[in-house]
Length: 274
Image (cartoon, rainbow, N blue to C red; front, side, top):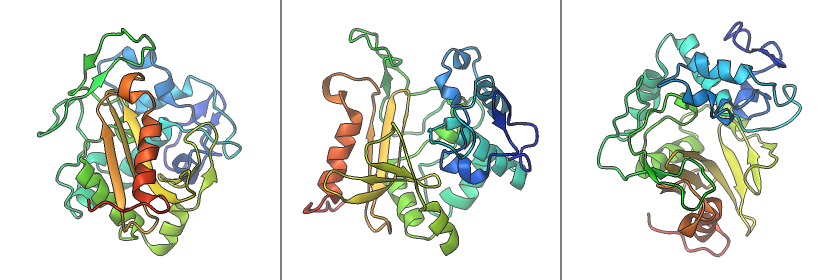
């Protein structure tokens, strides 16, 4: 990491000399997850990627690089910073030119700066700000400032685009064979998703029936998304829930997603036509 981002990863047990790009992408870097520090993410109206990394560096590393596993959004922020350092271009432009435009992902973009606009048509998104109080007020966060997440989850997309992208990625149309092999080489995870192993930016879930599906999931204030499919990308399923609190129909979003994946991909399932 020191080669790509000199002087960025340092302090509190973080050492850029010992962390590799691969460890960022499979979450074995030990880098503290900056989104765990919610007070720090409420002090500004917007954040630069460098400021997000500074928040992480103010905390102890989770473990020495390569000795454990922990999901960290800061890993993706650092990966985005590397893209910009290597290419000399904004990450948003690289995503558009290398992925969105060639794959005709017309609903996919990375907002620039503090742009809060959400292209229509779109659903509305609601949050209780992760309050455990069942009577906590519900906030409409359909338009929100996503700079605290940037490369880790600030993108806008649609379920159609997610299906198209993961079909291309898993189908081997975006990476060379040796790179595809590296992406699909996994490490075990702990205290994350049940039955999950993690590759480079993608994960493998073993469903209760024993079927393996490949893809990724993520949550942001007011939005919870999953997209998984067969390893070769012949069939994928993308799902979004536009609320992020427990209770009522959203008591267990992961359980809901698992049930949907089992219905679509589990042994004996009848594939949908979508």
